[in-house]
Image (cartoon, rainbow, N blue to C red; front, side, top):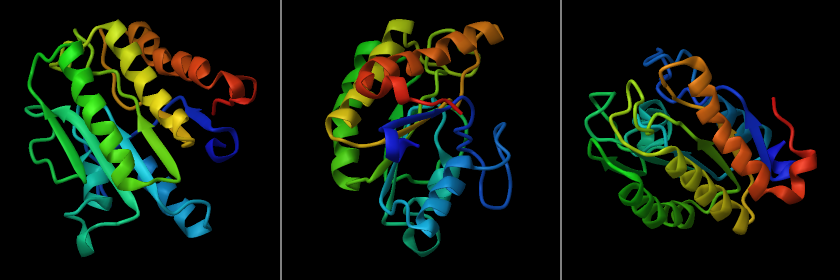
Length: 212
């Protein structure tokens, strides 16, 4: 759907801690890993980029695709993770590009790092398709986040990522990933930010954007 429409969203998923032989961190199966392998096998796409902005390191994706994976990883799948340096998981296998963040980071410092490293990830990966794990657990007050992004900061983050991908003509698959606000309603409201931003950024295809 993303290849056809430019953007697609799954109102779940982004289970980036699941590993080939076991689950971890609320994640049973690694949906992005499975989707990438299936698309490669079917010839739908070969070169892909994972942009993981969940506050927790995407260790499952790093284990499957990163440089520490068997055989030195998959050169056609680039893993980019911005995450809390002192947060789960304890062991963080190398992604292709890791950006560890100190506890308590605010909007401007976070967005500055994102503006510096996202273009690098895109340039190095030269993707045909991007998977965006738009976790909202970096927001202030998240039970497991330890960062201090504001709601406005999450809006700015998502808009920056989506505009960067749109302007380069890159189709994007959006997934929720983590978010642990004080109530389910507050969590859902934060997750809705990325989809509202996508509807605006990809306005030309908004009428055809399908949610699954």
